[in-house]
Image (cartoon, rainbow, N blue to C red; front, side, top):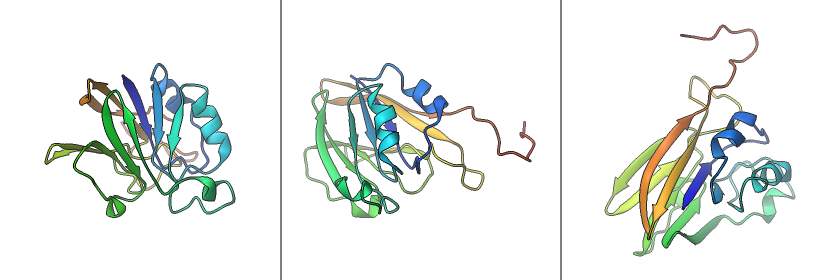
Length: 160
C-alpha cells in the first residue's frame, strides 16, 4: 500500500505536493492543515486522515482530532502533530508527526518515526517536502522524503 505523508501546509495547496502524492492509496496529514480546502484538494487524490496542529485553531481546525491511530496495509499508524505528544502502545509500527518543519525518518525500537517536513510556506532555509512510504503486510518499507521543486520566494535568486 502506497501512503503519502504531508504536514504543515498552513493553508497552502502546492501543485508540486499534489503531483508528488499522486498514485497513493491514502494521504495522512500531520497537522497545521490551514483550512478545509487543503483536505478537499488532498481528498481528490485518496482518502485522507488528518489531525489538528497547534495553528489549526479556527472553527474548521477544531473539528480535527488531536491524534489518530489507524491501520494501513496491516500496520498500526499513530498520527499526532507534535512529537512531544506521542503516546505509543506496543502495537504501533509507524508514528507520523509534524510541527518541526524538518523532514526526518528514524527507526527506533521497532517503530518507524516520520516527520514529512513542511509542504506549506517556506520557513527559513528548510526544504519544502512530503514523504511517501510503502506498507507491505504490516511492515513499513521504502520510506522516503520527497523534496518539492518549488520556485524561490519572489525577490530572491535561486541558489544552485
